Image (cartoon, rainbow, N blue to C red):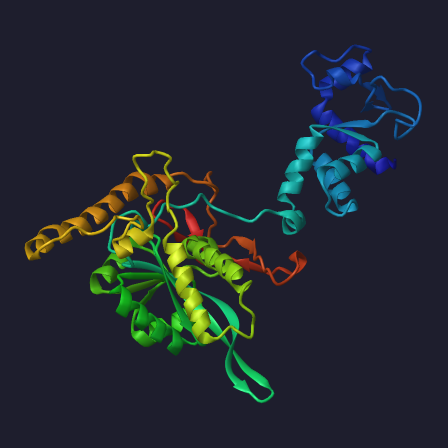
Length: 430
């Protein structure tokens, strides 16, 4: 070890272990409250070294024991930073091994190395976890009873290749996509088949949906170009900041469209889950259908069956109580049918029709909403992930932008220029 290093070590030890150096120089043991008590230190050339129980063999990095340095000195921090660079920004275990091999025993070294790795920009770029915030509260449209398809989530999926017409050389093929509308309240769905993903085609699908399901108060979707273009053509207000005053004003004025932030598919989990189920059902159906038999008419029929299967699913766990055989599903509310065999109808006259028909429908609707409040809403109470609040990102923070189409070393860096706090003050959009 050169003279300059020894001088720096002596300087740091005189600042942190002055009392221990005095005791050792006078052949006295260190005090009982000292951090060196269990290290059996000894003084050599004015430098405190590790005594310990091993005095021979290759266990010592030098002819004398390792030099003891306190982890709160700046010299020790420089030593750890250099060792971390030597091992090319690897984990604590490797960094600590280089420090020990260099002939130093760092008091509190593990804590120091972990803090340096935590603040290392290169390590955070290579292995840093993705930022997240405590999961937000559910929007009001998902927690209050409303007519089916009053609040709707929209997404598209596909494509599928179909046979459009027969030719001499075989057949001409084209592609089809599907637009899925899901009710945010009762979790029913409606699927429309489209020929392409352009905005005019989506507008036609939107008109067909509204003609069948009625007026919609609020649409939600991701920022797909077909959705953004459609709202511009229809004159529907597009909202990308969910502030309560703006949302209330747009809702009172008519239909509104709320876009989720880019690259935030978790905010549209309501319709993303429905698309996953639809794909699984279609995959099982396509096992029996070959590409030659798949036409627009066949695919449209399959979509109608998928629509019926998903709307018949239970939205709460099926009860084992024999006195509650009914299943709470969107099908009950949409069709006013329970799916049970009610037996043959009794003879009625005109008076009975006016007396009982509306009551039967009202009873089915009341049963659905009563179970919806007592059973379904309770399932939405718990937070299954992102439970703990995190520090908010602020303007000026430097972040690494995840790009699924490139490797991590090529992810771009960015600066936060604006944040959008939620109603609880937590930042989930930047």
